[in-house]
Length: 112
Image (cartoon, rainbow, N blue to C red; front, side, top):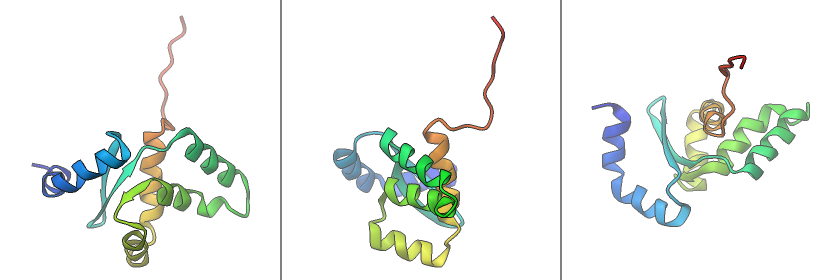
């Protein structure tokens, strides 16, 4: 059994509680011995990310802001503590959230 599967089992009651509050579109993200539960970015959250990424002064914080907007567990204080220990996770989790929003590197195309 993979680490994420084991962790999902351990967090089963928390996940059920979060699904009631945030809907069923939840994702368990695990990296560097840390984890969070996040929703996929909404169109508004994705647009805000793009707006920040387009501004030279805010670009470096764009993924961090997306992560903060989408994470529903741990709570904001817990997320701050996690990012205080491992600040790079904001970028790592944010990158995965972009994929969940459909922003993928590779797109297949076939001429019809």
